[in-house]
Image (cartoon, rainbow, N blue to C red; front, side, top):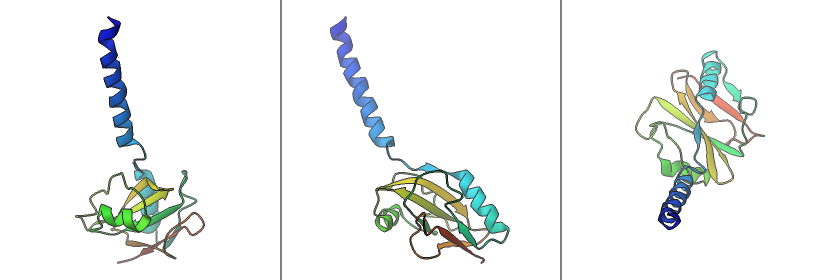
Length: 137
């Protein structure tokens, strides 16, 4: 009986290891942060400091406009991107804010273009240089 269960145990361990590789270092979506940023933008705020809104560790971030591909995200942040792009590669009604830590994306934040367009104040966003700019259209 013990010899029959060994292959099943090995197969289960291998499956768990394979699944953990797929889901490990995957960026999570932060829809709540997106709503906070959009509310500030709708209220007329044009400069939004991100560090006061984030409750997770990050060392860099960039905001991406419509039609940005996953390859551009990986190249510009010098990271391995695993996460949802929320369709920005084919839609023009949203931006995507991507936070990274070390060599991996940690959070993705979809942002509606309704309040305006988004950009970084002084290039790449960091916890020390964290101002997201909102430009009315």
